[in-house]
Image 1 (cartoon, rainbow, N blue to C red):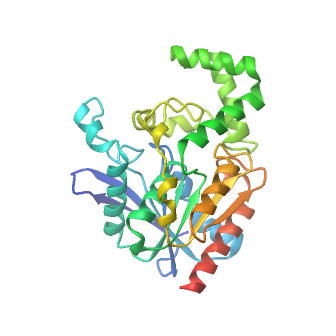
Image 2 (cartoon, rainbow, N blue to C red; image 1 turned 90 degrees about the horizontal axis):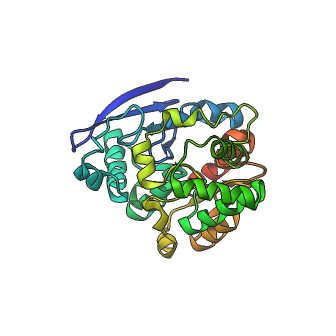
Image 3 (tube, one colour; image 1 turned 135 degrees about the vertical axis):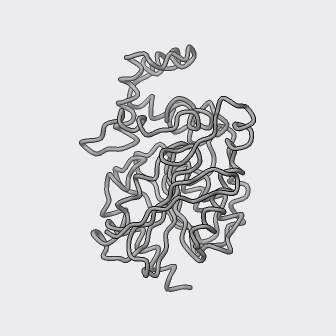
Length: 303
């Protein structure tokens, strides 16, 4: 599959790694936002090929590593002025708009996974003039519901005694504890990615932990960073563009919460991928790409 990588020079002096995949003449342009925060765009590299493979659809897919992530440059996070300036929602929203402009994208589709979904909600409100539609892939509209969900998932899978043990470790911040790590891996295999070959220990090697810990905390089942107070639901009724919400049945992002999100956004659609986790595009790709393609086709036809 044809691809092109490009270094984007931001106005703040830092360089961002970006790539596009697929046919440059494809009528549908999809800009994707990785999770984390501090994750990597690597998950989106096969998407243009997957659109062809699963639904025979021509989509050009764009992606980039956000500031501080993987192949993009990173400020020195030991300096408080850098943390204050860059590690906040407004910076990453402004960065997205600058990246869009540097990529020359307009009248395109935006898709964000997990933390990328936070930015997708925010961008859909801030810059709808550039969007044909947007897709939120596994992200609730408020962190309170997410915390309720992950606490219940811990209890259901591990039982109260083990949850109490995990909480005791979290209180001490002794995250190297082997028993805690084993419990966490069980949870990741149950609710993050449900494929047979998934290795939860592989992901952290690609994670910018300074960025992730500032927003999230130590792992996906602890929320101690600034994300804990994020709640965009009161503003969602102002989103007027077509929006698809997609989540997994076993996702850390609860189905019941995203149903409420879909009710709040005028005309939003919700797809629940049966038996899928937080990475349900990988768990059940046939269902995922068929549903996403159907949304794109409906939205294109209505333009």
